[in-house]
Image (cartoon, rainbow, N blue to C red; front, side):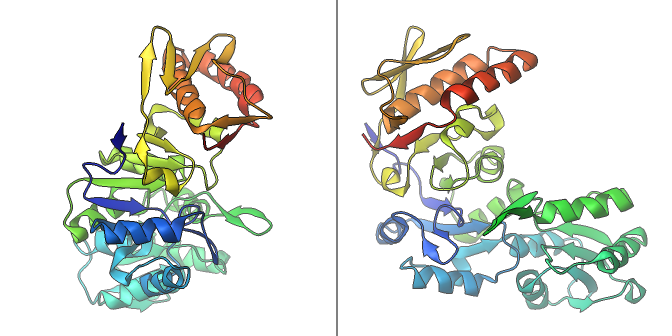
Length: 342
């Protein structure tokens, strides 16, 4: 078996669900990132959060026992400003919907923040603004109608809060898209801008992306040709990974960050069966079949890897309507599965 980190010169990591949960460290995160730093690998934290500044993020990480410097934190706000530099000269007036992170990034880059379309902003930047109202959005729409370039830090539809999934920046951005008919320049995951900025800043050629979000972290890495690790410490369930479309499939499947530091047991085909270690899986029109039955709804990490690859192989042979029906079958069969270490 080959070490999972072998051949890579840097780790790109998501934050929420990988490094921390709010004010709490994610499982094994302090130990993992300390080891990455000790190994001398490049390290970048990539987040679609446009409200926090890199300094604030780095301070939180350090408090949680995770070594980090502000220049290792790449926010969607920072990436959005980087996108603008080739299109909007420094010093020009810009309008902002968003919090401290995007405002600080624009100020640091030399832009002048204005609040009215009457001040002729050259661009409108939209990050998550929890206090944005009808008038704010309307003012931004008027500026865009007048020719201001439109930048969105990210297109996240929903964000997790204590009482459920609240509207994300993308939902508010879509109000301006609907009103103006203009599509924005988008910087955050899964777009390439934030990945390119981190790669260039670190001067690395072979990064490995670690994330919990299939449509942000994994899809973005795939678009940029960056191998990826998916960990089950965030929002995606095992069944979500099992049913992932090709664009959202990770290169490696892990339970948590512990697995990334260990040797990685890869899958292999034996006829119609897929094996990982001694655990086998077969997917066909009747569902998923395994060489050993789950115990109390729990499967080992090697059972999980075999099952995921078996399902991907079978689903790729189906048409769209067949795939949708099959997804319902697998959701019923595997929706409550939990993954544990061998």
